[in-house]
Length: 345
Length: 270
Image 1 (cartoon, each protein chain N blue to C red):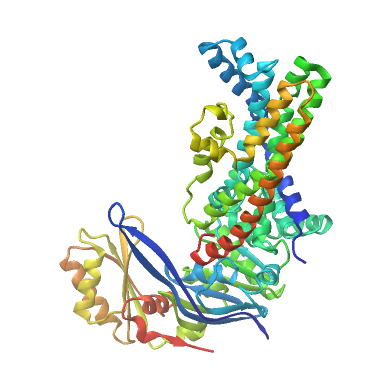
Image 2: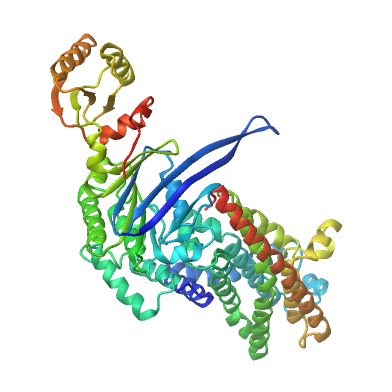
């Protein structure tokens, strides 16, 4: 299986200026990518995972020829993204944001026709492809193809965005958070479609996300990126194996009067464990998730309950689970998570 | 495969037709705009003076027709600047700019040719809108004159495109969404002699006006509205100046756009 995308030592810095007085300003340099390398095989679904600001969108924009890297190189089907940008554009279909990117007053079909013409599709071929992609993404079932874009729901917009990416029938799809903000049925439709495109139509799909569940469901391989560096890359089971000798203990509790950070600090100090994640949930509840060694579940759970009771916080549920990809992600992207960094084949 | 210039023009023409089809009131407002503008200018003029003195000062036979013609040309000029210079800002705002840049051809070609259909439609609508009034005042001869004005404005569009692309290049380079064109449009109209005769402007603005393509288009319109038979010599001199400006502006803008495109892609402006 050949390579569809190859990135080697990509470096990207953004320069901005902070105003400090009427005439003075300070130069700020943000290192968005610090030597990113990875490759994507033809016909695979490759996920680039990372928290906000990790460098996912910068990476996808470089591959899509929208940004010029400061160092390193990227190739798409052997074409350099800077030197042969036009050839790269001929073989990629891109969806960058599901929220916008179309003319508001035009219908979905009119928008597709416009972008199809810009891609150089001839009339007959364009009409055929339009009908095909409208059916494929399910816009016909929703009777949305002839509605103005401004009346579209977020789910419809995501589908139209994917339809545009698929319109010229490109062998490679680059999708930046294609399901962000979507309702579960729409997200499921998009995910199933991406898997089908890769496995039935042999398309290469590169997708960025911070949804671990999604990555686990659809990606053949994933790379975890944090602060501009790839910190792990491999098949999902390989990454999960890194924490296979661990268990995840999860406690659901009422939101306390003190901040969640205080709870995290207290539990971390008391248990001498750094693999802890606390996050708020809906309906006045919050969740604490701790990665520990098998056999220590009961001790950990009882100690956490003790701490929470001492803070007058009511505990509702305690679960013990196998660690997920999300646990791997949280461990690696947390401060001090460098010890988990792994690169698989 | 790649995308040809013809496909870029066709796609943008198609999107505009759809735009007007879905926004019929917008089309109506464009058609009545020169009449509204003329009405305001004439009403204000009558408040402070008389139509007779206006005719005398500008040596024109029909002030209504003159104001209508210059209003249509001003609208066309604003239309061109708006379509071209605001092109990158508009597409950045609605989120389509990255998809235009990803068209499989040179980016500067997409940015250069995408706004031409809108400019042409803006000019045509503004000038054609005044035909009923012209036909009423001057009959078939007036319609012929307006057709000539339309052709002159098309020619005048060439250097104005270059000027607008320069502004568009600047907005492509900056990361924010500063509406540079909207700030510049009133100034361009001022130094083009749309609102006041150029002779009464300060000396420095008179110098600036010599490099403004719209100034010569307005001059041509004035000749056509003033005399029954245009002064051929003067008309050719103005066309000659427009040709020089066309070469100058378009050469500078093509060079600028290519280097600013690279700069924008380095800075993350797209």
